[in-house]
Image 1 (cartoon, helix red, strand yellow):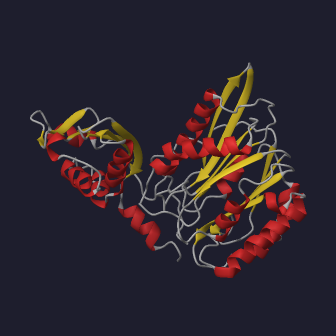
Image 2: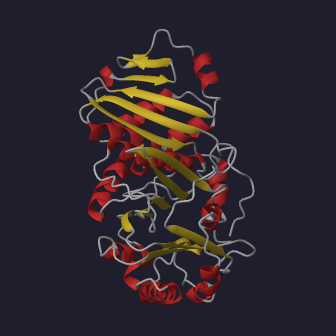
Image 3: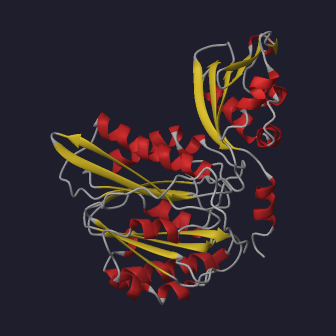
Length: 408
């Protein structure tokens, strides 16, 4: 396994001070699943009545834990719930053994915590195609149970990391009827990021009271505006999972509440962008704004075509304002476009318009802009009202080094 020692230059200064969410406790342990000398298993136990919503990868080669969680989402919210996550091994492409591992871990968590097996949700992330040594996890469950704490969410964020260079957390608080409702979330993700219903692994907790079907509907809509608008390398994981848990401990019903929905979206977008900022080998964070498309769907198609282009991403890494590569990406996307209506900007610098380089374009100014760490590329198609924003990073030698050595 490649050892990641250098923190991404795009990382936040520190892990945020997340609020303790009433109704959920965390514990972590070093089980030796694959790594040595670091925590690699996280357990969260949630109070009775917690609603759990989830979105997952649509990969045709979904991992066994994903399939198990998908079956359980939408079930009864009675009784407590639990989430167990391991890093280092994805338990994917492991045939019937993978299902056995999920069953063994789920039953062991149920026995240790008293949570019904139907309310135990598991996730695994790491190497694909190797059997999960679930016995190492099972052996640590009593320790995990004994260490459960309301204040260990940062430890949980660190335990689920693989090639991540920093733990990811975000929070928000909103006042409803004069009372506070809190949201806190953690995520892991660095490579194999081109989500289709989620990102790598994300867990969000709130003390809001909201029924499961309403929570699920809200999560699905906001995922499309956040986690489904990021890409690091165009590759969708076998293990993408996002669980949103509402403990109800605040006693505040947030069903249909706009302020709560906006606060949740803020947390989700923060976490999604942190995943991009930790893209394997990334040195640039790039926001791609597409306007004037024939539809929002077309705008997103164009945005992702630009964001996923190796030629665009390597030009960004080289700080080269090569707008011709953006024209190329738009042309290949398959969505409606007219060469002679296009305009392209780097930040506030108009680069191209009406099918040609802008007469006021200054290469030196654009080159200077590309030296920044946070970049905005704006494209207007001139066709309609469709718009979309997606986020990506550059593609550097670091990405190759990390992934060439990932299993060694």
